[in-house]
Image (cartoon, rainbow, N blue to C red; front, side, top):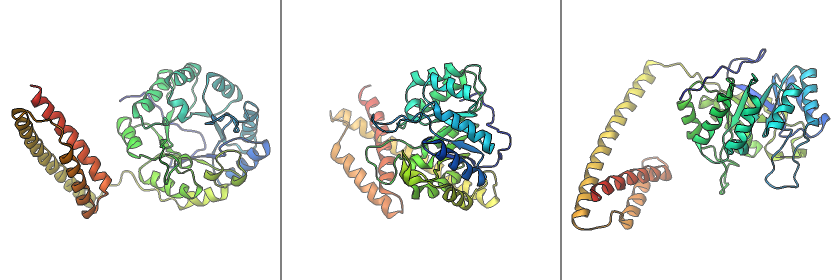
Length: 355
């Protein structure tokens, strides 16, 4: 997939990984904004974030300070020299931000999920050259995420990036939003020149998860981080549990190990060659398995049997899951693999029966 993109390069901001954007979930008071910004600037952070309009799940919560907060961001820019950024969800938000001289905008997960809203923002941005970051939609829909990127790009904006903030799940165990890393990895495969940032605050939902999630993002080759940082996290008016102080953020960033994306040694190439051999073997075994499945399909057709044999299917999943555990693999991973294999087996048998 081809998007017409240009690098998001800001004067005075290092081009080395990671690009770091930090600041409070919400702009609450001028004092809170200025205190947090000055502390972050002292730690070397160059881009300050703060939510001005906050889409809350239910009415009655703090829904953002509104336009008044844009003046505070202008003051941050004036006092610290930092670039400033906030979230936009409507054309009116865009116009207000452009009028206030905001340097960078992002589109939130709830907005990305709505093509009408994204198109409205894209229309408002026509003729403007400003960096735009687009969070993944709340649900794990890569096409919807790419669609939002395309809408903004089609409006003529080229300095575009993505933010991975995880995906909503009813069953919340460790994470507030499940990382499902394979989705941003697939986005990177589809659009290789697209910068992708990680939002560990919204993925984790708890400040103790920020550090490991930041490291995981770096290990996966993400380009940057957007982290919620507040001068008094426990007193925050929104998302208190996932915000860290500027001191803690500085500690986390200093501990990060940034691995090279490009180094390739002879030993690594040899291991990759072995992986290729394993993959070729897997393909041959899968092809053999499908040939047997087609023979079974022919047998079922001749004897007027149903394709789906539920008892046999359950037996395969349970056995293979247990085998996977014994081989050092996650049982659920193995079950998912065999669910896909079974789906293809059924498809091929359906072709035979319906001939």
